[in-house]
Length: 159
Image (cartoon, rainbow, N blue to C red; front, top):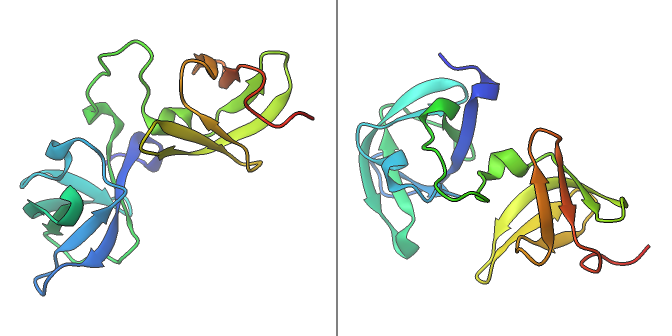
């Protein structure tokens, strides 16, 4: 069984949907096969099988697992099951969370707390309250091995 660092979050158990134990997946991965019938998800570190899957309001996945799970529980998959990203500067959210963000001049802005999907573009939310657009004009470099993101000056409030 994979350990917690080897698991990548793909959603959370949301509100119930019907009376059979189905629920809406909140913050769901965009990969539909993640929630397909027969897929294995990890809930609190233990495997569970998707026994039914459909799309609900707004296209959100509605699934039922082979066992009961608590609302709010994290749904995860093993890291090695994720497909490689096809684009050169594409990243999974879990790869960016925790990275140090600094401006080109070296001023530290904080660490990535979350990546939020907005209609125009994704946004890096930092632990300092700063929000930065995840666009080429702002993000100059993502250094996963070095644990940092370098952004252009002018996107965060001046000191």
